[in-house]
Every structure is written in C-alpha cells, then in structure tokens.
Image 1: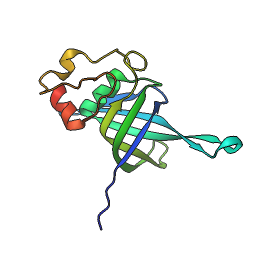
Image 2: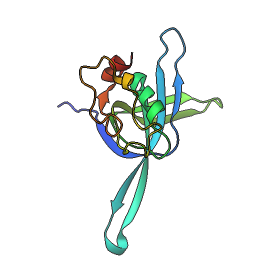
Image 3: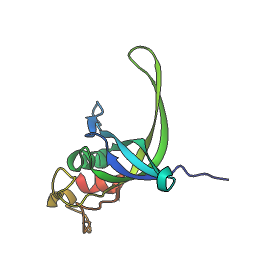
Image 4: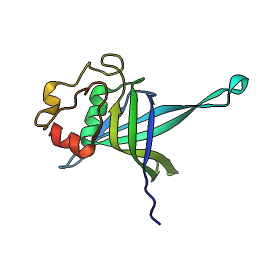
Length: 151
C-alpha cells in the first residue's frame, strides 16, 4: 500500500513573511511564514474556536510571490507536503520543526485588501501561454510554473 504526503490549509499570515536567499552561485529564494488556521468545535454554549498555527516554506518563484504579494493578515491557501526538520541551534540544543513545503499557493484576498499591491505587474506573467484571469485574487500555480513565468 502506498501513502501520499499531501495536505492543504487556508488561513491568514500571523506576521510578515521572512524571505532569504541561500548562498552560493545557485542562490535560491526561500520564504518562511506561518498561517493561522481556525477550527470551530461544538455548538451553542459549547461552541469554541481553536486556532492552529501551520509553518510554511516556499522556494524560488513561489517565494517571490509570497514576498511581493503577502503580509501579516493576508489570506492564503497552501498545498504541499508535510516535512519534519532537525538542526542543532547556537546553544548546541537539538531543535525540530514541522512545516508544509509548498507545491501550490493561492492568494485569497480581494484585490487591494490584503496584498501588498493591488495586482501583480503585467510582466510578472510575461511569456505565459495564458495568464491567470484573477491573478491578484486567486493564484494557484506550481513552483515550476511560477519559476518558468518569472525567470
């Protein structure tokens, strides 16, 4: 039996994304951000809203989109694979995190309400066979599609 590592969430950024580039000749843009995903449990007087925080990481073209068109409070949809990572911090302590490595990203805010700009520049999608009809409101492309269009 084969299992697939795939998950999807819709939520709002808890803070502005942190965007860096890897070093070296083949530098890659990387965006890290967390989204708040709300869940309602119970009914009536027992109704309770719970917020779960989901860490996300985007690379290359998707990282550029996150950097240019999201900020704290932006509503996004993310889809990707769940990844656990370990490292040793500066105090020599073993640390770990669980994050979603994005395969696709959807910008869900109406134009001008949650994005840094009202819509992506026309040349953002230059060379594409067909640009998304509502790029500023709902954008869902794979990392490879974004990289091909933005390079």
